[in-house]
Length: 316
Image (cartoon, rainbow, N blue to C red):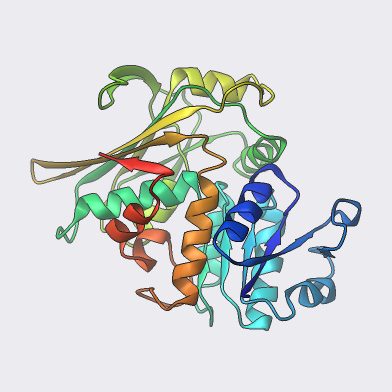
């Protein structure tokens, strides 16, 4: 049985990843910083490279679900490089994603940051929508969430990111990332039915502004969030009740032409698990298009990958 280390296995997303690995016939090896929460697992600290090396001994790949990724990504990637195994994470932290692309451009093994609902799914949809186009004028990724009950990990990661950018927000325009301190624009986005037009916050920047332009020739990537979801995040509500439903609507524009692709599903944390595990399965079976550090859209056959996400994600 192929073993895959899950770092942060006891976290909310980590538990989904562990269950998905088991469902697909992998042997998940549980790891993380808190030994008390890992009976029978392999505790390891990002401050102790030797402990990470012990945790990674004999595994085929590692999935990092432990945020803040500004603290965990680099040491776990370095350990994966020493072990000679691929690394996948679910980081939605823009700064951590940027660090990964910059620091591991010459990685000897596959490194995939943001292989999650934010960053990975939008990138796959944008890549699939691009089709045979070699470039585009602009890409828009609109998140139609019925709500957002952030986990403690999400909130901690957000605090780290805000601190690193001095409280400013990020926009990707004219082919570069810019920092701004003005208010987010309030708009309406025409989501596919049955959701329909919804109030959104424009330039609600997510990891897609890192993953998409890392391999697609596009000078402008803008992400949007339904107002009700943004309010849930800012209120720091605890997860309770039914998981949120979502529509991720991607619009690509080039020379006056428009291409569009959307994905529907439920629970943004649960759907991250099949995204990350599908990535690992494809890497281990040689179904990749490049080596080193790469986003989902560059590394995989995007349309085929999206079809493989059924029944977790419905396209169209």
